[in-house]
Image 1 (cartoon, rainbow, N blue to C red):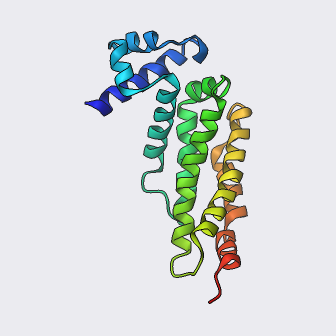
Image 2 (cartoon, rainbow, N blue to C red; image 1 turned 180 degrees about the horizontal axis):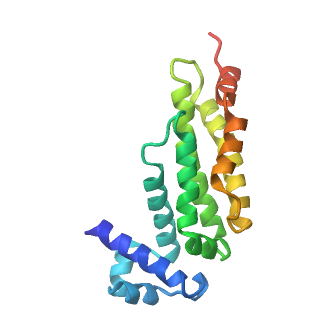
Image 3 (cartoon, rainbow, N blue to C red; image 1 turned 180 degrees about the vertical axis):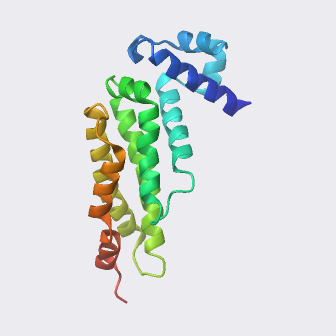
Length: 186
C-alpha cells in the first residue's frame, strides 16, 4: 500500500505541474488532488522536494531496468532521455524552479548507477582499484549529464537517438582504454 500511495502522490504532483508552477504548489494541493490528508503525505515524504526526488528515482529505475551492461548502456541512456521527455512538464518545472539541483542530483545518481555497472562489467578479471573504476564512471557521468542538462536547457528539441548515436561514437572502446590505463601492475 505504501508504494501505491507514493505513486499516487507522484501522479498528483505531475498533474498539478501541468496547471501551475512548482513554487505555487502546496502540500495541501497535492493531498487534495490525491484524495488524502496532509498527515498521510508526511507519513511518506518530509516535503515536496523529497517527493520530487523519490519520483525522479522511481521513474529512472523503471527506465533503466535490464539496461545496465556494456551492450545495453545506449538503450538505458536512451530510456533515461525518454523518461525525462515523457515527464517534460514535471522536469521543466522542477528544472526552472529553485530545485534545479534536484534534477541534476537525480541525473547524476541514475547515470552513475548505469555507468558503474558498465565499468565493473568491463573490468571483470582486471586488476583495477575500485576508486579508479569509480573515477572512470564519474568522468563519464559528468559528460553524459552535462549533455542531458544542455538538452533540457534547450527544451528537449534534439532527437535523443541522435545524441546517443554521437555518444556511442565517442565512448565506444574508450572505457576499456581507461581501464587499461588504470590497470594495477603486480
